[in-house]
Length: 245
Image (cartoon, rainbow, N blue to C red; front, top):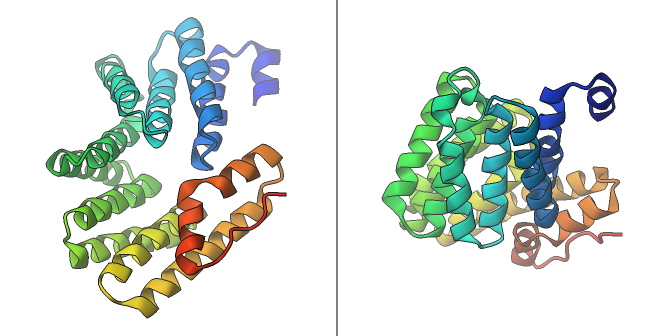
């Protein structure tokens, strides 16, 4: 796509491509690169394209990368900037605002604002359902499960996380599967259901190993295997993550 866009002078895809690369970095926890690429995506979109859709995608991804870095102030600033674009993008905002709502819910959860987090998660799930965005519906349900778990409502959390996993299995998304399995395993451990918890965590580890085996680029593989959520799965099982090299 990059070769085509450069050859054709296609400004829309030249504006979109940095956040597409940045999305890959974000999903395998290469956060420095995710911040760099999505910042570039925002700047390139401002320069080349008059409509907000590419910027919306860049900004919610940039905000999540800051959040996963633990920089809540920067995440909040970027999310609010993305939200300010909504009224300028009546046609294309459905492609990115669901992720923005969920991302704001993740920030609220990280700050212990459970009511706000639930409002954002419910809004994201409703939008994902209306637009038939099944991956984003799975992510929104998983966020609801995380909120319930943080509130100590463990049985409710297990049901929400199971529903999220069912959705992930239906559409075959490995990333949503392992993250959901890890989250459900944690909740089941807290419920004292050790055998079920181990089964979920073992399944998560297998999926992580499958993803890692397919990551040929050394930087992507190293970042993925060094990520804290990945390490947590293996530490809980008393195992060592796959080697990065």
